[in-house]
Image (cartoon, rainbow, N blue to C red):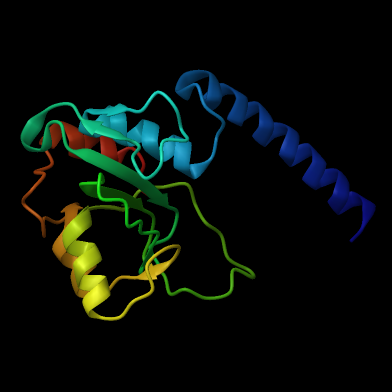
Amino acid sequence: MSDVNVERIARLLRERNSVDEKISSIIQRPVASGHLGDWIAAQVFGIELEPSTVTSAIDGRFSSGPLRGQTVNVKWYLKREGLLDVTERPALDFYLVLTGPASRASSSRGGTRPWCIESVYLFDARRLLAELRARGVRIGTASSVLAAQWAAAEIYPRTGNPALPVRPEQAELLRLFAP
């Protein structure tokens, strides 16, 4: 790599660090897709986040609406590759998954992972766990979720899951993060 490219990368990282610092001052956490996804979901869907980010499997609880009081684990995947990090913790009620564009799980070489939200999914944690076990899917990091399960769980922009209707004002906020 040439010195010019190293200098360019160093300059771009300083710019990124400046932006990350501004975002961190708003969300009160370091900028990572997990923390930022939790914050966005809390703002859009009325989730009261856990005070600590180390609470196992639960990021917060819905504070209003049809799921009021139910626990939720928020995920933000910058691409939807058909995989979901799944836990066996019985206290978890739902996964709320924000995703960027659909993509096949493949090499990241030459690709990007844009910070955007194209779709949102709501999975019933216990039902999903039972369905994965019935298929013999390994439970944990990067569990394979079928396309039909993603479609049935979608709440934005299309509605496959009526358990959490997205109100027009929520849809407008989500559109702000469109690719």
